[in-house]
Length: 482
Image: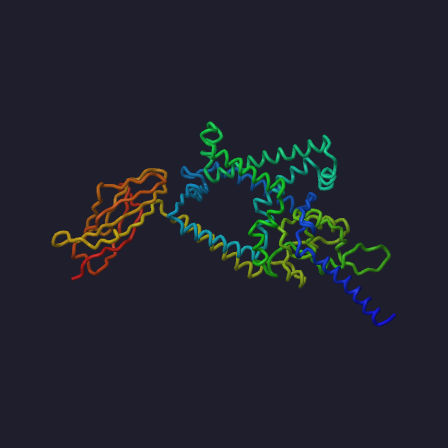
């Protein structure tokens, strides 16, 4: 063979190797649920069986009980949680937060982001697999109903390919009717977290004409939930969820993930009797792929689409039991622990991040608990200097704004904390603030000149409801300096 022929042959072999390598690495730039033409590939996930799936099932029952039960829990006449965005009213642990509390809400969001960063850096997507509402509703409610009506993955595939006969129409119709009914129920409770269960009861019990907006919201939410759980499904996690996009940059090689032990499992294959082989424990059965709700192959390494649901762990452990191999070929681990062969342990880094997470939660809890039920903002009337009151007194005019976060109307009076001066309300003796409302007023502070030692004097004002002091605020008094 000529030199030119040898080069051509070598080039062809190299092209084949390159193509195989690209095919092997294709998972890195494609989604398992989308084919090469960009069309949707429906994922038929097999029903997992194993200890992790059982634990997740029991936990999901707890999550559902909490989700459907919390709207009925009231503390001091308010829902335990409510997020009334249209009216800008937010309730946490029975405490009302108004726009005046924006700094607490903003700080809460910052702390929440910090918590996510710390938690994900240490524990990966543990939240996604064990506590995310999307995962729990999809895998522990809608997917189980799908198994019940249409059967396991193989039966679902056969039904999808079957002609539209009576059986297919009945099963598909029953599934979608149940899916929409559940979506409607979920949307009712979702709306209860926004407007409260009592207002939701009014929408349900009173004439529809009085609650067109509320009923329209129910239908919109129902359509969204139905579309997500009946059609969009895993695409929410792989294409929409911002947390899924962030987790790849938040984790490192020490983060806890669902991982395949490639050192133990490779090379893959089934050992033949009476033959010497150097195969790993992975028999290439694809059980881990068949149960994955996002359709990935965990053996390719950590991937963006993995939600850490542990279905592949249960599937692999079942196979290991059948072939007499130890469990844990797929397990919770870190990339470094797989590389070094060490077991995953609670590292100093994880402990530090856990402490920081707890500190963040403690600080937020402190802010919520110590927040005042009546907030006030006092400022001197702009454009006015002090006023002389006779020969020995000086007055300043102030404006005050209140936010009443209680469930009762409050008549407020204002007094100087240290005495020695006088408060004169403009036009009335008390300032009336409606429940969960706001109020305002104007007043003069009159001080003797002998109490004024500088251009600006700090004074404290006490807010009283009868004899009960609700709050103390500090402001400055402008006066002459001789």
